[in-house]
Image (cartoon, rainbow, N blue to C red; front, side, top):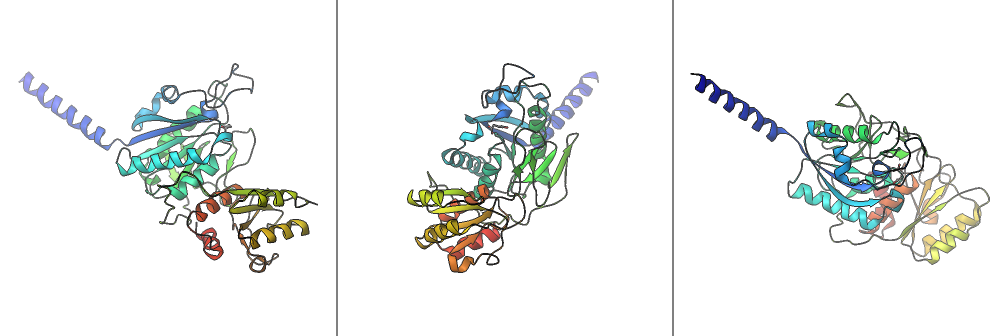
Length: 349
Ligand code: SIN
């Protein structure tokens, strides 16, 4: 009798283990470096080197992540995100697309430096072809610092990635207990841990106590993504910064370097003084796509209001900041040089 009870109990235990194992989300963490993998000599001093800690050590530091899924890690790069580059972007998006195509995971988390995290997030948002969760995360304090934020942020990112409601939201950024849409998020403080914000629209969700709650969803998540499968580089697009009494030297210098596009980070509603306006119009005449964006940090640049965009041959970035406008312009230029189509992309993506 005792033996029968033991057998029944083992079958029940095995069945429940098998069920948990099969419902457990498979999450791959792709590490690229950044402060989240940063290491310093002192827990109280600010100096540290980004991208030093390998993925296995990052994962071992937060064993709680294994409560939320079957977690594995891969090292894609070990760089501070100031050195993030198009080659690594392409490697990252190709690997994420491959992971989902081969059904290797249900979700992906990308650990990344915070400096250019918003650009990588938007690039992935525009190029990952699957609806499964892709969550970017970083830290403002290195792993060796007192009150470091990386472990908590990593745990939260895994919680978000494992959550069923994170699907079909495009790429998201999970930082400091908040969830942001990749398109809208931006780094707003050089050193403060509450640096990430979506200045126009706010966070789309919150993470607390191992739970995720979404409040909003961006409408800018078109089903058609850019296909970069066969690409090893992207068209050259540069950014020019606007300021009072600017001469046009930087515009001419860039124009002569042979770009396919120029993003102008203009004053106010993407405005420029006369010399810069003239130089940009000349660039547009040469076939360079000139996109007016704003240095203001929020709001949108409106088409054909203060500036005669149609006449001058410009497009506007709508509400994308200059660095994100550059990402969309580079990707748009992989498909077309048609100004009207590119303008439409700025209204759709
Ligand atoms: C970096 O972006 O890699 C350095 C800064 C950071 O991660 O916070």
